[in-house]
Image (cartoon, rainbow, N blue to C red; front, side, top):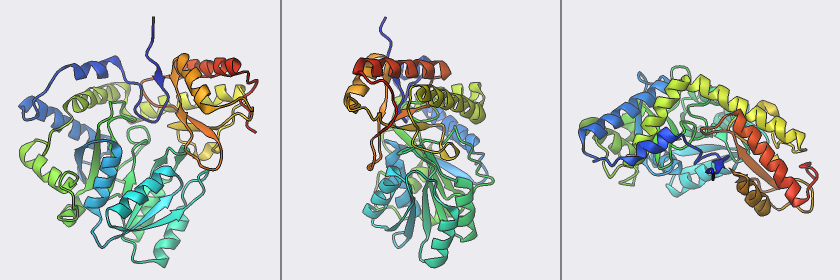
Length: 371
């Protein structure tokens, strides 16, 4: 019997049959039942960050990057100055879209193998008072680094700067509490740790800044303030919503709650991550990051030093054994990545390691040891 390949990627990812089945019904976007699903999902999302008192949540059509762009353009005034804490590919993407939105943007580079530094941020904000907003990628999946959100938020609050958090790969797995961590905007998406399908992002906006968002965004479709106001007034989306994606997300959230919420999901992902790292170590593979900054979301491994290794062949062979891996995102050295998230557990991770072992044998590679 043919089994669907398991996606060991940072999203899209493997979903449950319940989540897939939820998409078998068609919905009218103005229908009261669908509006109730929208309202229920928004409430559940605020529950996860304990943000009902301090924040609103605005869903948006499109991939997570759509919502990052929408958040920057909605929250940051056109004469604002954004500082992007950069330790990877997704940080650089945030800086690129901020610049394209016409916002003055400064990059603060950090090595890809290190977490960003709250102390460095403090020094930069002291040095340049023109900075109005800071952008942080919570889990930089270019390498898999966990960045210190709570400490960065503390520095931003101390300096009265706005904080925009890309929590795409961390939301619902790593703890984020809006009561103790202040952020102006926090962005995530349906197809990540909530284990829904891709096609929808959502942005938590701090209530205190809503009025200052009016008129910032030059885009009709991406204006989160307009989307929020319209949704509050009518219960509807301004433009055609991703109906199947939303109901799949509602079903995925129900399963998230049944599992035990964020703490339980984190525990499963941590077990997945440890099973993967231990199993790959037995095959000679070396993780790129130190354990202290390794998020349990995706692991970057050094490529084997054997001359017969070629990622494309490695990928195709692993796929034949039922697992889809992810290419490396680092520019200086050759790596590949293995995701730990999705509707999978340690058993599937053990199977994945076995698939990699078979792949090495087929390629005539004795060990995953790096060069």
